[in-house]
Image (tube, rainbow, N blue to C red):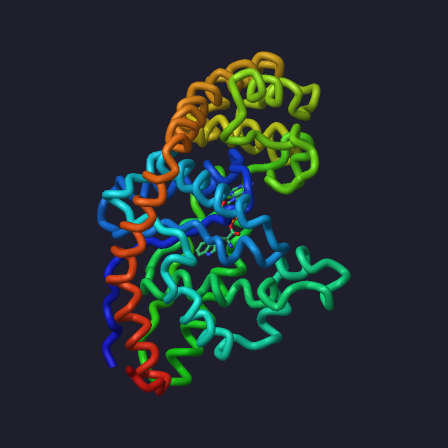
Length: 341
Ligand code: TYM
């Protein structure tokens, strides 16, 4: 049987769990914009509100506000709702419908091995929600309900994307079809794992209790400069070659952040700054970060003044999305043997 060909299509998503970090921007959103603008792909970007209630339920108004704010963040970062399909997950019901089928494809053992499940459920897995356990099956449905071929994400999502491939392969195998694509994770560039500013061995995260550990996209110029100035470093000057950063996680992180913001390589950053002490390099990095991030934060605030416009954009996005998802779900139901009304 010849391999079916799939339209080159990018899908990626982000949780509206409140706040956006430099990690979200460099590891995901900025790369989404690049793929949108590069051409050659249809691009679909999604706020995953159904995922956002798996760890804990949110106040309904807070969740609505987070979702609109995330949408504003996507647009402010350069996602163009005319070029890309911009959606909120719950407004495209085929995500949740396909997720149910995938709940019956995925095995308990597969889900139990997910490190994110283990981290988030912690010692008290009995008290975690069933939704948290099933989270990766919904994520697979997000991707496969578009027959997406490429998924740009940060490093922390790698295992979930491997599971997505396993689910697609098992569905195809069990039903004897070549229906779902085996999706390519796109985990590329220097910023796929932006680290915590106070501990270079931990990921930068919006859920860290200390605000000093991250740059938020809503931070003003002073806050950005202060956090970079106070970022943990070591007493040595910057080395001449990237190999010299290997055992210096904090230094490496700042160089990588600089390279990602300046759209260059870590080696080019070292070529320009080697021998500099951190006091000096941090000033240059703070200027660059403010130059790149301040316009995003200003634009986000402007967009948030018109929530009705955001809702209208998401309404149009959902309509366009369903032109793709409804036929794929219908074909899935036919393959599985569900009656059509
Ligand atoms: P979420 O909301 O935790 O993060 C969204 C994206 O940001 C990336 N990211 C980072 N990248 C580099 N360094 C960091 N410190 C950093 N922190 C976050 C994440 O890797 C991710 O790409 N499960 C997903 C959401 C999701 C999804 C999907 C993604 C749901 N369905 C389908 C892709 C396809 C999540 O929780 O991402």
